[in-house]
Length: 431
Image (cartoon, rainbow, N blue to C red):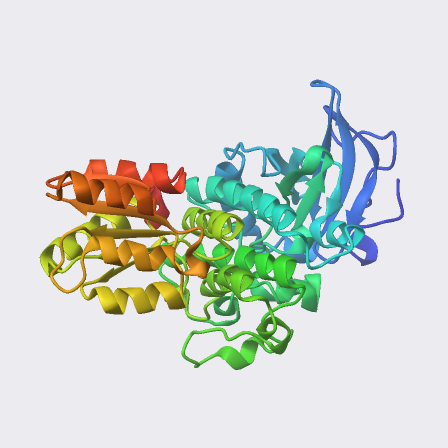
C-alpha cells in the first residue's frame, strides 16, 4: 500500500499501490495527483484493455451536501460523450468513499501549455482554435442539463493532436465555493461572481457561469492579462454589471478590441447581461474573427435609400440572416457618405434613383475614397436604362438587384459579395 491516505488518524484509508488491484477490474499503475479534495490514480481496465483515471473523494468531502451533489450528477455525467470532454465511465464506492472512473488523457493543463508557447498572449489562430473546442465541449455538457461550474485553465488539458479536453467534469460542484477555491487564487479568478453569493440563481442562468469562465480564458489568451485585478472580484458586487478594460487592454489595436469587447460581454458581473450561451459566444467570436481577417474590423453594411419603410425592411432582413453583422440604414445620401468615409463598411447597398443624389454620383464618390478600396457595392434599381447601366459598370458596381425582390434574393447576393458562410442561428443558442 502507498503511504498516501484518504483521511487522517486511525481511520486512515490507504490507497492501493502500483501493481495492486483497486477492484476486480482495475489494477493501479501509479498516483496521478492528490490534493485536499481527492486522490487520482492511473489504472488499467484489464477487461477493456485501456488506461483509466480513478478519482476517489477524500473523507472530509464525502459527507452531507457535497457527497449528495457529487452522487446526484454522476448518472448524467456518465451520459456525456464528446471528444472535448473527459468522459466519465462509471462510479461507485470504495471503502465507503465515492469514486468515479473516467477517461485517461495524457497532456498538460492549458495554463502550462500556454507558457510553453511563449504566451500569453497567443496568436489569434491558436486562441480561436482552443476557444472553439472549449465551447463545443461545454455545449455538450449543457445539452445534458448540467453545468461544469469550475472551468479554468487548470481544468482544461491540451492533449496530443491539439485536442482540447475539459477535465474535472463531475467534480466541480464538490464542497461549494469554498472547495472550489481550494485550487488557489488563480483558479478562483475564473469563478463567476455569483459563485460567491448566497442567492440561488434561476436554473436558466446557471450555465452562464461557464460562459463567464470561457470568455475570461479567451481574454487572457488574446490580451495576456485579465480585465481586472485578481482578488478584486468581491468588490464588483452591487455595481452596474459591466466590466471595464484594465490598463493593459486599453492600448490594444483597434481591430483586436472588437474581440475584446465581445468577450467582455461574456464576463458581465450580472449573469442576466452576459451572452446567453456558449454556442452564442462561439458564433459571435467566429463572425468577428472572420471579419477581422478579411476587413481588419467587424463586418459592417451600410444601406442607403430615401424610402424609410423599404430601408427598415431591408435592414431587418439582413440582421435576421446575418446576426452579429452591423447593418446601418441611412436615408440621406450625404449623411451616408460621411458615415462611409469615417468608418468604411464591407458593403454598401444603395438605390439608383434618389432625389438629392442618385446612385451614380454616390457610387462615384465612394470609388474616389482611398479608404473604401475593399468596400463592395450593390445597386438596387427599378429602372435606369442602358446609359446608366453602362456608367455603373464603368464605376465598378459589384452587383445589381432589380426591384421588386424577395429577401432570399437579397441574402443570397450579400453572401456572394462578402463570401460569407453564415448559418441561420441555432434556436438552442438562446437556451
